[in-house]
Image: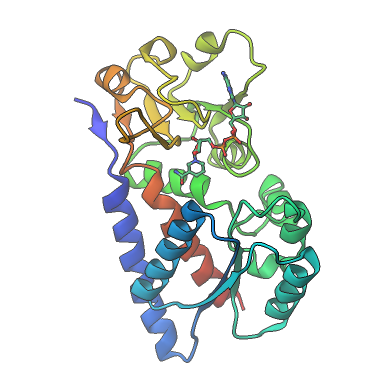
Length: 280
Ligand code: NAD
């Protein structure tokens, strides 16, 4: 029987644990606060920002929302980040991506104080992950590690294949699996014989950004399959990078879309905010 990894339930459990922790921190006089900056009015970004505010309210984290107009300049944005870096009561700073084209995303990310970099995108956070030092970890891959651990799936010694090498999913995912003592291979758009490589995987993480690309021809019988993709299909229904109906019957465990990896990202953002507050 295939185990369906329930990201909704696991993320709800994490949020409840954090809520209790935030409550007890309040008792000791510590209030956690996240600043969320959105530039422009991209509808998808507005939904993500709204969900982050809702999660903060549920857990008991204060959220400061900065909704800036599309024409905000790079200098204005950097000035706001510098102010938030200096604000003692702000523990975490999140700039919702993507930013409008006239703003240099890399420079904006570098401007955030790494101690407040709850998205884990700052080069210092990525470097710390790479050399095994404390730092914030990108939320989606951190959530995947939680999904595996809380579903009783052992990583140590396993053949792990990650498809995708993006800075926010593929690369940190590979580093985290390595930290958990997996034997890790990263496949990408220039990889030859992809099926041969993915068929070796005991744990296959798919972050390829192509709807239903991964069919059972790519998957070893009994593998654990983690689907990071989110797309809308022709009927406006959500689907992943994995062809779920084709793959699920042959694997030992799989994440559905929706309800798998997706809900974990916000839960781990909240986790990082609490960590930012307690590290202070
Ligand atoms: P991306 O487009 O930045 O990266 C895709 C990666 O896939 C690239 O590194 C590329 O080399 C690789 N790739 C592309 N075509 C390939 C092919 N034919 N064979 C092998 N490799 C190939 O995407 P991303 O930001 O890493 O996101 C991946 C998916 O995950 C997207 O569907 C995105 O929407 C989704 N996502 C979900 C969450 C979440 O919270 N669930 C978070 C971030 C991204």
